[in-house]
Structures are given as structure tokens and as C-alpha cells.
Length: 460
Image (tube, rainbow, N blue to C red; front, side, top):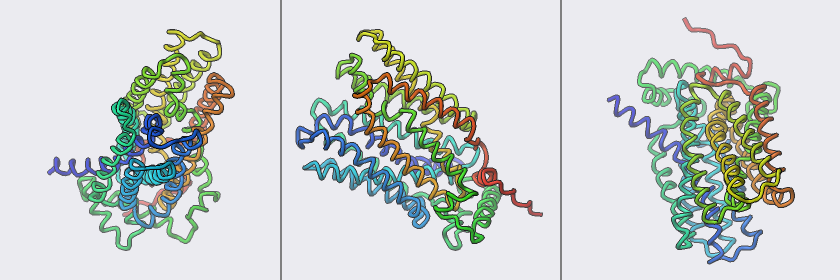
């Protein structure tokens, strides 16, 4: 019986987080596919930029729509819809016959990415027990890195045949698995209580299945019911309430979290590592293989982050990661500004700097953002708060991705790395001064501490 229960629970985490593979794969695979798409579809530099950024624009739209839809449709059904969108976008892009079709279906894929990036962390956070919520919620980030790694490997595998359609099209397999699998899983008990008439009974069934006992389910249900009751007293808790006196500090912390996660420079490494490596003397083939190795480090270093997030806590990981990234960016800054000639020393120092940076990010800021965001916002504005923050996350992502090539051409790598070194230091200051620790606390406890509300009176 216990084994069967663990199997059912594991299925929830697996199908809930499977969207991360799609997110990572569709984000990473285009870097290799772009080398061979011009064999069939002529692409000017502008069109190449639109093919890449089309997904990011779609992700902003998908994330922006997800807040209201997650409350009206439910977390589970919206993840299912995201899987269907992935299938449509992936097949359309893989079969594209002209630039407009390719850009359009990349945009559709982006809508799926945006939906998944908002709803999956929320869904996993609301279903997970508080003791291991960080580990389970960060499972999506691990699968994002797995998706990126698989994209790099797929690019390499089909590079000899110039098979860009297969590079993109293989992404339909996890998309179908997600759409089918998530539909067999339960709805979030917190959504059931807050949005479905008579949903408490359904929520009790889900919680009993997840926690293994009716007593544990009833205790957690009492906390959820108290939170929902506190927020249904007529106060406006829609998206506009995020700018009100009560919720503004939480919203500012959430926005700063996604701002720094992007402006510490991670997207310059994920999208442009081969370019950076060829600039310092790597051959094209060597740069592609090195990029696969970087993807492997990104994936493997997420594992200790998942292990530590519920032991060390969110803040210590973010602080450690910011210092590691800052040190790596300082190394890359010095390496590029002192005028080293191309040779083994420059190649080694550049690769070491990139690997240290990726490792520091993957163990900290990579998984922690997606755990911390749903934890920060109260239940009634969780969907809206996470949706708005993730929409800006994709905007910041696109801004860095579009600006970096021009800045690299105008100022060189060294000054850009110096900018990111400063940003990683500011990220350290932000975490130290503003970000609360949420480890081992129920979502309702976090809500009360951030809003200053008293705990509910104990029942006799």
C-alpha cells in the first residue's frame, strides 16, 4: 500500500515537472538548428533574430495570460493546455516551409513555455509537503537543465545530416507525455478550496492521498481554509492589490528576484557560450562540444541545489551562488581586459570562468527562483503575482539576449563581464537585505509573516 502511494505521489511530481524538459529543450535547441535552417529557408540576420526571440515573446504572452486562467481553469487543466500548445507549436515549427511559418509556430511554442513557467511551479508548490517543498518544486528546474542538455546533444547528433527539422520535432515526444500524464493527476487542493464550490471535500481526498493520513490532511486543510477565509472578507486581492500597501513589499521582492536572476548574465552563457569560446580561439567543433559539457555542468550542479534547498535554506544558497558568480565574472573580466594572446592559457581561464559561473548559478539562483516565487505570494494573489513576475522574467530574458550581441560587438567581452560582476554583487546585497527565508514553513505561515497578520487562534 505504501509503495503504491509513493508511486502515485511520484507520478504527480514527474508529470507536473515534465514541462521543464520542454521549456529547456525548446529554449536550447534553436542554437544548433539555426546553423542548418538556411539550407531550406533563407534567413536574414533580422529573421534569425525573430526566429530566436519569437519564443521569448510568446513566453511573455503565455505567462501574462496564465494568472487569470490558472484561477479560472485550475492549475492541472492549464498545464494540460500548455502541453497541447507545445505539441501544436513544435509540429508546426518542425514542418515550417517559410520564415513566417517558422517564426509563428516558435511564437506558439513560446506561449506553451510561458504557461508552464508560471503554472508548474505553482502547482508543485501547492501540492508539496512543506518539509520537502523546495526539493520537489525545484525538480522543474532540474528538468529545464536536462532539457537544455538534451537540446545540445540533439543538435550535435543531427549536425552531420543538417537535420534541423528533427532537432526541433523531437520535442513533441515530451509534449505529448505531459498533456496525457498531467490529465491523470489531481488538482491543487488549495485551488479546490479557493475556487470550487464544495471543493473542501475534494481537497481532503487529495491531501489524504498525498500526506498518507486523514489527520495530516485535516490539519493542512484547516490552514488552507483559514487563509482562504481571511482573504474573502471583501478586500480587493486582484492584481491591482499587489501595488497596495499590504502586498507591495512582497511584489517588489518578487520582481527584484526575477530581475537579478536574468541580469546576473546567465542568458549570455546559455545562448552565446559557443560564440564566446570561438572568440578566444576555440574551433567551431570544439566550441560545440564544450557547450555540451557546459550543459552537463548546468544539469549536474542542479542536483546538489535540490538537495540543499530544504536543508541549508533559500537565502544561504542564493548568497553563496551570487558570490560564486561574482568571482567567476571577475575572472572573465580580468582575463579579457588584460590582453592575453590567444593560446592555452586564455582558453583554460575562459572555460574555467564559464564553468564556475554555470555551477554557481545552477546550485542556487537556477532552482531557488522557481521555488521562492510561489512561496512569497498569498493564495488569492498567488496566480496573479507569479504570472506578472514571470512575464517580466521573460521580458528581462529577452532584453539581455537581444542586447548582448550588440554590446559584445561595441565594448568587447571584458566590459560586459564587468557589468555582470557588479550585478551579481548587487544580487548578493538584495538577498541579504530584503529576501525572507521560507524554508520549512507552510505557505500560510509565510503569508502571515510577510503581511504581518497574526496566526489564527487555536481551536479548543
